[in-house]
Length: 308
Image (cartoon, rainbow, N blue to C red; front, side, top):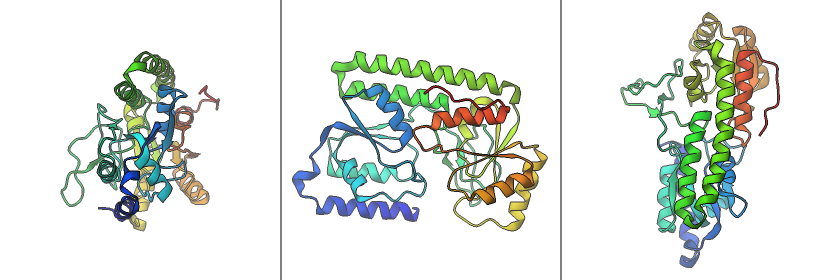
């Protein structure tokens, strides 16, 4: 188990142990809890204004190195229901603790039905193709890539799962949730078609990322994702040089980074590769805008602001 997950479990256990028994089962029937901001964006549009949707992780948090605040844990324990991504390392323990303190809390896996990409965490290049048989250096099966929301097509599956969850929570308003979801799906369909058309001439091309967050996006549109960062350990100078050479050989034109990466280092890597550098924030509620921006950068289209 990763260190941050252990800290998370201890904090949550303390929270439940110090709370009076009656407080553990108290619940805000108008609040729904999700793991990350992109889920909040989707669920708010389906649930409507009568529900408050809160994210356990704020927009600046890294889902893979998550250390929750005590107030966030308390909010999660008091929500009407919890909507998990389904692939995050912290979620299994979180849900076990939630159910221990609030046994009647409904929990939902919003990535149910998504065709998962195996092999998250590899140190070699990540492609957009489904593997299913990847193994790490010790011979163990790799975990699924957790970045399921970084795909407009996956977002449509997540939205449908949320619609069904809301209907199960509040069947009297089934028509409302269905209509809201239909409008959202139409918007996502439109964005998916626009990105697919824009990237059709780019099929087979390679883009570079620091963190392997765009595997599903790459798979959707026939691209290849090449990762230059190393997962949770220092990379040797030789390995780093190999990746630079690989990116250059693949005629990589774009290097996607998140805001946490030092901009000077990112620009230097881009210069060595001969690529343009583009900052994305894929854990914010504007992640669809950034996916659209990523497609424009890859296709060298003029920058435009898509409708939300």
